[in-house]
Length: 89
Image 1 (tube, one colour):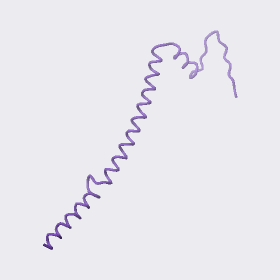
Image 2 (cartoon, rainbow, N blue to C red):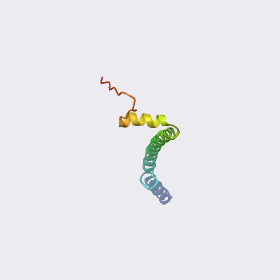
Image 3 (cartoon, rainbow, N blue to C red):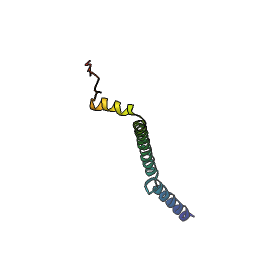
């Protein structure tokens, strides 16, 4: 009977060691969950960026106003009959 108890204790200890340190251990699962959460945040950021770029593409496709605004802001272009004033604060 003592041998049976000793064998069971050794088995329990081995299973505990496997649970805490082996493949699929609790530490590894926590690390995977943290990595998954980071990847989810990264995906959400990229989805938001893609949505804003898609909206900009649609805006550029539908009208000249967006193209004109971009040319004015980014390239400093003005129409032939306009006078450009720069306000420095």
